[in-house]
Length: 320
Ligand SMILES: NC(=O)c1ccc[n+]([C@@H]2O[C@H](COP(=O)([O-])OP(=O)(O)OC[C@H]3O[C@@H](n4cnc5c(N)ncnc54)[C@H](OP(=O)(O)O)[C@@H]3O)[C@@H](O)[C@H]2O)c1
Image 1 (cartoon, rainbow, N blue to C red):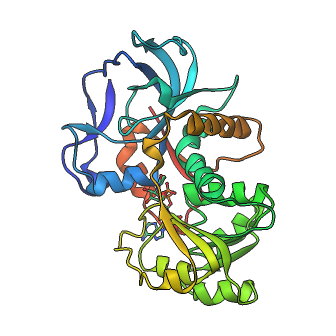
Image 2: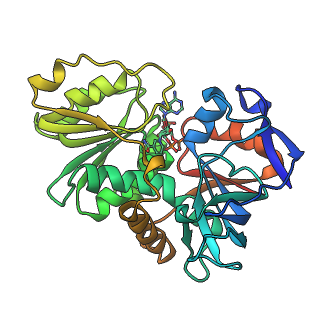
């Protein structure tokens, strides 16, 4: 099969489109002929810095396609079904072997590119808003990096729940465009003081919950922009800078800072169940996966380079 591989960490240029051996599914896995690949923020970070589990390495979390073989112990999937799939690696290829309990059967006619983008971004946003926190119509939520994959999913899900949604992004154009998805108030974190603006917007109270996929020095500002008893959920580190806070700012405001990694949880019935519902909500058109741009997998270098540009909204996808 053809795949975009690398043999050392680095910038997009380490990727090389090559012929490598087809993956062989294990007993609890299925083999998928990939139709679409979601280029996740985590894929970019993994390419830059995660030690390679093998060489050449095929990076990538999310893709969707058609089951072409099933392992001996797989009873609930069959050849010919279209699925969205998550794996710790392997999305950037024409074929991938993934655990059957990390697959979701697509509704008839579902768009493969949109479905590929749901489990990681929408799953993570859902877990943060409704499982780790309890967002309702009475909540005020701050979403850091609201134009990113996880950020835009969080904006939509919080807005659908009736919450007030304040978002940050690096340009006014992004923030204006995000209003269509339910963003109530936008803060340009390149030019505005986020903490001060949040306090102005909330009559000095602060938000109930801040969802932070970006990290870096801004996380401290988010802590101070939450209300007394508020909650910050740290999800990642797109900022690429150390995330350090003064821990005493937590007890001083009775605040909670927490984090989780969804990748180890997809096989649980709880997470598998709500990801299936999210895929259905996207297929029904109630939630929208915004695809910024599609590239052929053979142009993975260009796709990664483009995805690293700031100021975008939504996902970059690749097609084998
Ligand atoms: N914990 C979990 O289970 C989990 C699950 C999924 C993802 N994540 C993590 O969450 C993070 C976001 O993932 P994603 O898929 O949403 O990524 P993405 O689509 O690439 O979005 C990244 C966002 O970060 C913002 N950003 C701020 N400073 C940045 C910088 N210096 N460089 C690049 N982007 C910057 C960008 O917004 P602007 O351009 O507007 O600044 C963009 O909206 C990643 O660190 C990922 O690993 C964690």
